[in-house]
Length: 375
Image (cartoon, rainbow, N blue to C red; front, side, top):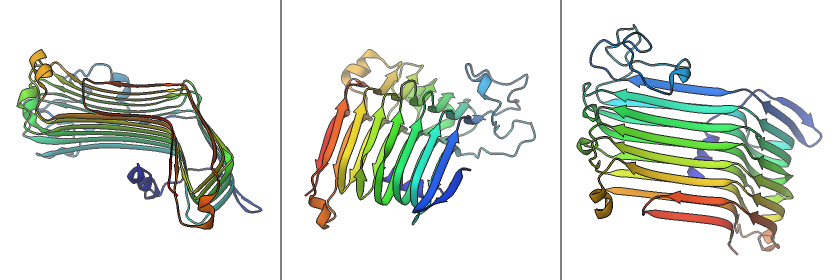
């Protein structure tokens, strides 16, 4: 998780917002109600075929999304620059809204509200021709992120009705593929302060969701020479500071990760790794007082290997590993060796929610209403 949060600081993104100078810091007001949709489509064809033309392949269920952004591979004959080499295809989408990254800045009051949809969609259809391709698909959505020196008062609302969704999908002929990587990340309501977070609230209400769908459909799964790696991470309501005071946090939405590999020929692909991580209501601080965390949402991770034989499932799939982690209401109290590190911790945590894993075996962790304290 630390690597994920550190990466946010390197993005260098700020959204248009109302910013005023207060008596002891800036006042920030960011409200977004629109949608961000990024779509990459790659069709690997050995002959002259036109995407979205008469000879276009029918990729069922996504026709309404294709108007966003389209890339066609070499040999498409539509005058587009060649974006697919003989051995590598990389597809990535990043959506970001309501972002303030400003080291050394004191924020007296911050309001960030996102009521729209962020969708990152990567689709690739392969044929039996086209050589041996390594395919990488990455989708990431960021909403309501603050990284500063100090925040005196903050209100972050992801929803109601907000959606972050990542769809990574690969289908078609195995003969043109040698390895597959699919990564999805959704992050909402994050405050990281060097010094302190004074008061406020973080809201992730009902009918609000973070969803990741990684899907691989192979016609000859048993002949895939390389590994398939699928991973999804959803993070909502995070506070990181030396001191955190009087913050209420509510998680009532959904965090869902689904990783699926379909083997149409009934043969098991060798080397499949699937992982899912959901985190809601996480606090890391040296001092915490007046903290309230309430959760009644859902956290679900589903890792599926479909189409393989019953014998494969009973005997164990060679090279198949999968894991899941669901964490809600986690308080991490650090020790910086200062005089304040020994102060009493005052926090209330309540979780009444579903945490679910769908898998036959593997490594699974479910954490709710937990505290780790270093003294």
